Length: 212
Image 1 (cartoon, rainbow, N blue to C red):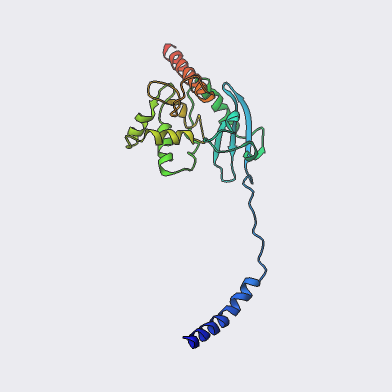
Image 2 (tube, rainbow, N blue to C red; image 1 turned 120 degrees about the vertical axis):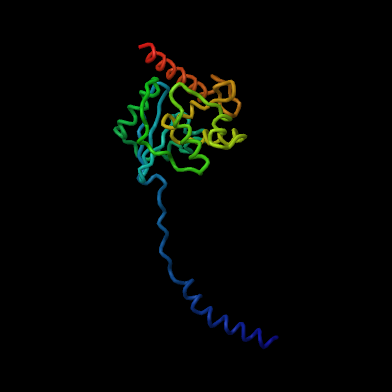
């Protein structure tokens, strides 16, 4: 056994010689890609407060309210990750977002759904088909995607929506209340106040159109 061990060590030493040289070779420093590289944003005023749109290097769009940047969920972005500010970014989209907040019916079909899990994208895409002024509960939306009983998971997908207004998560409400899935009652938080205002504007706009 001792002899075999010596042979084994000898062989490892022979093979290890080249490996030692390889490990001792200087390595090129890894290029660290800044997470904000190529990311641009625009901040603008809307009927529900300051709102931002983000365009990344791959052409994907995100959006949200400025005062929700620190909150958990949503885009997951912070002020520092918005990238370069470009005041004239995506002018047509920004104009449509303002019109939508005013209760006007607008088309966002040209804006792609953001990346996410298969479940999240299914929830978001079905949500995009809910018209202005209409609502669905988390449970109803779960049933629509063939996942009855997954209301809580639908609520989490809504919470991680990175493109509000385009994906109208304000039209998804709690059972019997317009508050969020977490049990917030309507009007008791910034987000539920926005949801209530957006739904009211859409219903007013729909009523005016029908009466006209």
